Length: 85
Image (cartoon, rainbow, N blue to C red):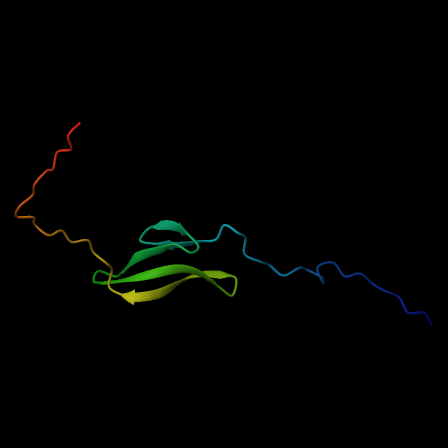
């Protein structure tokens, strides 16, 4: 008896891998892997999150509660210096 090798199509399929251009979807838009955004969840919850890859899928990783906001402070005395020239 001889031992034969039989090729079975589809038996040696290479594993799927995520491409280099992975994106997450958040707040109705696509963002690149590694991006950090203020993620709105529902009508009242917001937090800072980063788009990351987990087991060949993209996912949001919570960085901190809430989102940073810019605040301006009123300036009572604003003077302009002139440079002679």
